[in-house]
Length: 296
Image (tube, rainbow, N blue to C red; front, side, top):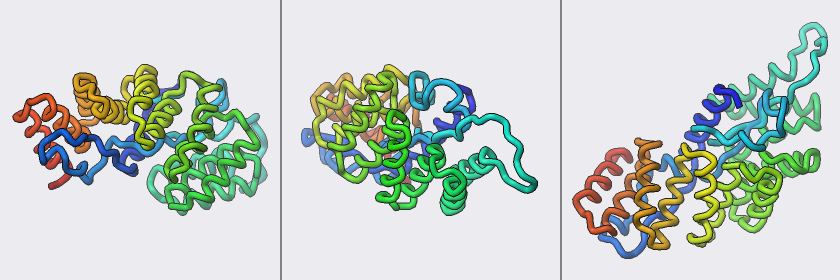
């Protein structure tokens, strides 16, 4: 994986983190401050990690296989590498259109990205890259059903595409269809056991079912595969808190704050654990830092 792709994944992970639903990190055994809801400003609790596809993904191993987990959040499928061809005068190549669509998506111009991906699909209806990336754009625009239809079509064309399986699993989970989401994520792991995002999203599905102990192994595995995965550390901290592994939770939350020092939720979770460890002064500092970061 190129440095450029790693940087892109890092940017996307941060973007996804800002969009996600928050997870309740505390238990009922703490002081009043610790029992309150998590701060409004979520920075690390990630709903999912969408994969955008780009030019380099089809040049070697299948997108999403070993080595694709980011070193530092969500990634679109790259435009497949193609044999050089002569374009008619005035024509815009699919590669150029694909880059323009991804740029528009990264800049938040979702309608423009949607239009360009739709044009790419008009040119080639079986373009899995464009179809996957259009699904991610539509999902961000709130058109979840349309996004799922596009991802289903991607898998009809390429049933073993790991990145698409992870994307659909994450999207299904975001809509509360946890059983179907788990099937997709486990299928992704059958094809690519070392895919950090698939392990993370599987852990997140289990977390959202309230099965905290069962969430620990996939979250730990995601971290083993990518030790800069801040969201995985955050949710691991929450899961370990719920099963009363306070020292483990403390270490996970501390690592989450190191990786994302502006994450209000991670500091809040750290405060909860320090409270439970009877370290009230340190806990108060973490709560204060969380409020500062949340703008309160």
